[in-house]
Structures are given as structure tokens and as C-alpha cells.
Length: 321
Image (cartoon, rainbow, N blue to C red; front, side, top):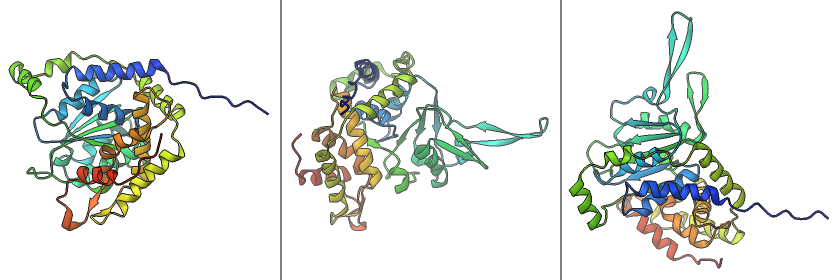
């Protein structure tokens, strides 16, 4: 009988590179380790990040700082009401000399794309990101074009109650693996920020801490070496089932959402140096991964979805590790 081959251990080199990435971002985004960790979890989960908060608390700064610390290409798109889908993905232009159509690639062709104030553009333009975020490719005319690997969208948006915003549709929200906020910094740090003013120079001084290959290697390690047991899988299923059967919720967490909870929990375990997913990993990611996917009944639209999901989590028995 052949011997069972144990999986290779997690690479401490990969983990070290990721932790240096977190430390670099923390030099600019001070006092917000939870937001930084959420961004890194989204990156390593092969997903996309939505940062939602009021203006002026550092949404764009977090996105730009993370992008600056990553190797690879970076593009920023300022979303406005007159932005067109072709402004994002590109367009085919006829070359009269060569008698052929040439592709003029849009800013979506980058490793990291900052979609700034994504809810200030129309639903038609928002939808231009759907194929890119789901499949890592875009269709222009009759041709399909692959996007660089890795590919990540970091989108920022202001709360829906702000003037001139277009709420993202459910299908678009479901493409973001994590939604997070920033909030005001701790008082002592905020005083320092106010005293010394703009932190743009801090962002410019950040050089890439990791390479594209570092990110791809870390993703591979997570996929191949971080184990999730049947008990923890059942725990995830219990969470998503509870959201679907809750009386205040019209539409609960989708199957994609359940997959994303597992993917994010694997990354969370990896960042803690473990090769298995613990129930606490699931609890740690369930709200930022799942809350924005909930659709409340019309009469309960004003409910805080994060608090609602936290309440649901409190009703579910946590399995022993």
C-alpha cells in the first residue's frame, strides 16, 4: 500500500512578505489594522474590495497605499455620471493606414484598479466591471481579452444617502468578496494627522514591498495547504442557511457568498500561520464578507446589516475546533 504524502508546510517566506505588506500600508493608514487586514484578505482571496464610508476618512488613501505597496501595474478611474463603459474597458479603433481595427485598452487592464466613488456613475457603466470582476476578462466587440494576473478591483463609495449616488445592484455587490469601512482614526492619531496635514508624500515614498509573483505564490499556498474540516464547512452552511430563513431578510447569503466566506477564512488562518481553518476564522470574516449581500424586506430596509448578521451569528452554535 502506498504511503500517504503529507502536504507541504506553509511557506514562511510568503507569509513574511505579506506581513511586510501590511506593515507598509500601516505607515500611512495609522490606527486602522482591521481595515488593512480586510484589504489584504480580499487580495489573497482572489477577490475584490469595496470600501464604503463618509468622505474624507481615507478610503482612497487606503486603496492607493495598498496599490503602491504591490508590484505590478496600477490604474485609477474616477467614476462620474458621464463616464462610459468604453472609458473603462477600451474600444476598437479603425486604423485607416493598416486597414484594421486596433484595440485601445482601457484602464481596466492593470493588476490593481482603483474604482474611485464607483456609485457616482450610472448602472450601465457600473456593469462594465461585472465580467472583469467575475471572469478576469473583458469582451470588446466580438473578442475576449484576458486581464493581467493577479487582477483586483478596489472600489470606494460614499453612503447611498449622499447626493448624486447610484446604489450598486445586488449582482455587483455580490462580486465584492469584502466590504469594509474606515471610520475616524483614534483621537491621538487624528490630532497628528490634522497637525501635519496631507499624507500624499507618505504614499509617494512607498515602494513595492511584494511582487506579483509573491502574491500568486501566497495564493497558491493558501489554496493547496490550508485545510477546512467538514465541521467548519457545516458551520459556514449553518450561517448562510440562517440568513435565508430569517424573517427580516428577503434574500440571504448566496452560494458564492458561502464560497467567499471559506476563501476569506482560509486567508485569515494563513495570516495567523496556521494550515487549517478554525471556527474563529469564519466568525472573523463572516460579517465583512456576508453583510453586504443581505437584502432586507422592504419594511426593514433601514436596518444595519452588519449588526443583523452579528445577531444571527450569536444564535448559531460554534463547533469545537
